[in-house]
Image 1: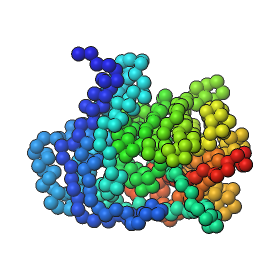
Image 2: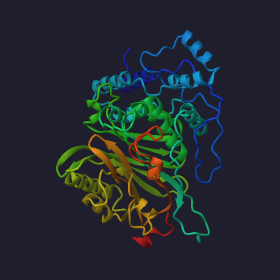
Image 3: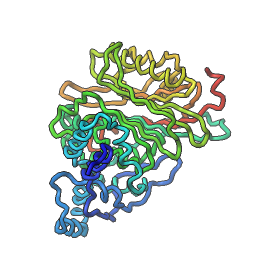
Image 4: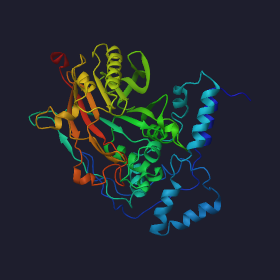
Length: 456
C-alpha cells in the first residue's frame, strides 16, 4: 500500500523510538544537591516517574524480552542494582544509527519532504510530561555523580520599582554535540565516562528543567529527533531545528547525524507568527553556519518579539569570516524585524570574544542591541570573564564566546543567572561529571519596557 513521504517518515520515527518494556521506581533520597529556581521553594521531593524511561527506545541490541524485564524488576529491590538498572532502562537517544539511517533514507526519497514535516510528524502524538516528575527522574539517574554547579540569579531591577512586571525567561546554551565531545574535541582532563550519553543527557535535561525557560536556544544539538524534540514537545514547547549543511559530527564513527541550532518556546506563553531558517553567508559565499529566527506573539500582552539563535564559525584565524557571517545575520534580522520595529533577542555561541569585530558590529548595530550579561558587571559595560573553560591537547582555553543580545529600547533585563567560580568549576575545567558541556548556560528574565518608543 502506498504511503505518503510524511507517513513513511512518521512510521520510521515510531519504529526507531520503540517504548521500553519496563521502567523503574527508585525511592531512595537523591544525594545530589537540588537548587530551587528563584521564587520557588525547595525542589520537589523524589518520586521517580515513568515518563522518560517508559517511552524512549533502548539502544540497538538491548533486550526487551520477559526475562530481561523480570531481571530488571528484581534488581529494584536493592539500591545499588536499582541505580544500575535506571541507567540501562532509560537509554534515551541511543538508537542513533538506526534512527538517522531511517531519516536519511526517507528524506532522500522525495525532495518534497521537508524538515517541517518531520517535526510535525511527532507533534501532539504523546501525553504531556510533568516537568517536576521528569526532573526527579533525572536526579535519580544522576545521584551517583557530584552535585551540580550552584548558580544564583541576580536581580537587575532597581528596588524602587513598585510593581513587578510579567517576565519571560530566555536560556542560551551550547550543549556540546555528543559526537564532538566523544570523538573530536579532545577534552584531555575530562574522563570519557563523564561524556557518555547514557548519563550526560540527564545532566543536560536537568539544567533545562531547573531553569524552565519560556524560550530555549541551543547549539551543537545532534540528538534533536530522538531526545530533545520528543521530550520538549511533551513539556509544551514548540520545536524548530536547523542542521549544519556539513556538520563535523558526520566525520565521527557511529554519529547521531548532523548537529545544528534549535529553538524551543512554550506554547502557553507565545504563539508563532513566522519562522525563518537562515544559512549564513560570508559575502557571496554560503557557509556551514546557520541561524533560526522566529517572530512570536506574547499570549498575555499580544506584543510581538523576534528570537534568533545562531552558532558562528569557530577557531582562531577566522575573525573576518565571523564578521561577515554576523553582518549577514544582522541584515536578515533587520528585514525580519522591519528595522527593529519588532523587538529582538539574539542568542548564540559567536566563537568571538568582546575584542572581535563581529562583537563590535552587534554592539553598534542600528538594531540598538545590548548584551544582557554586561549588566552583571560593576560598570554595566564589561562581559563576564568566561562563558567557556576547557583543556584540550592544544592547551587551556578560557573565553567569553556566548551572548544574549536584546533590543534595549523595547526590553529590559530583570534578572540574570550568575556564572560559577573557578573553584566551583574545578581544576579539570569543563565538561565534567557535574556539568555536561564545555560552555556554560546563560539565563535571563526579560520584560517589555512600558514606553519603548521614547528610547528609540
